Amino acid sequence: MNKYKFLKSINDNKSHHVDEPALDNSFNQFLLELEKQGLIECPQVYLSDGNPGLVAYWITAKGIDYVDNHSPKQKISDIAIGALFGALFSLLVWLIENYLFKK
Image (cartoon, rainbow, N blue to C red; front, side):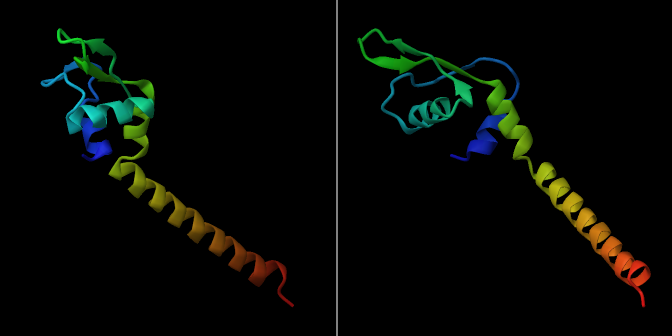
């Protein structure tokens, strides 16, 4: 599952319920991995059969920052700003070479 898309889908500051609470399915393993990274909170509980499970999850502040920093718009703006500064630096170097150090 795509981490960015999943975190973006739960970026509403609400608690979301797990359909299958047992830890032996891939979705719950994905939730546990995100919790290890600090991107979500998903407290473990003991189910009626005595095994641990998950019943709810929600995004953390670190998860919200992850979504904000990895959005496609952020990447595009970072590239555009980098290109703009590169062009301005090149222009400045050209001006210095041609006007200050001109023989």
